[in-house]
Image 1 (tube, rainbow, N blue to C red):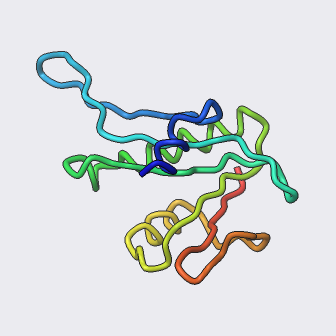
Image 2: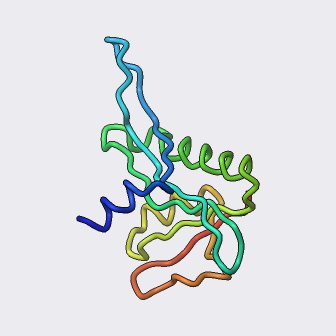
Amino acid sequence: GDVKRGELQSPKARFIVSSLQHADCQPKPNGFIHYRFVSDERRPVLYVFEIQIDSSSQGLGVGRHLMNAAEKTAKAAGMSFVLLTVFKHNAEALKFYKKLGYSLDSKASADGDCFQELCKQV
């Protein structure tokens, strides 16, 4: 609701959008990452707030492409880590992130009963 809308509309919010080129030559967005550059008491990071992939594009490498773009963005901005939070019950997401080289953040401050922080050095 309002909290999510506020996060997405924040001046600090950044986005990477993926799109498909259709036969009518009009690109159609099929996924995005919402991220921010964050400095906490531990280190400066690119924090992935959200990744969304259109259901018709899932399993086609769009998520991997977007995460790779986020990692390159982090590196270009001088960040050493990409950090994200994932629900513990979301087995598909956990498998996806682990396949990309993400692991439990040993310095996590946000692990809870329902979620955990994953990170990757870039």
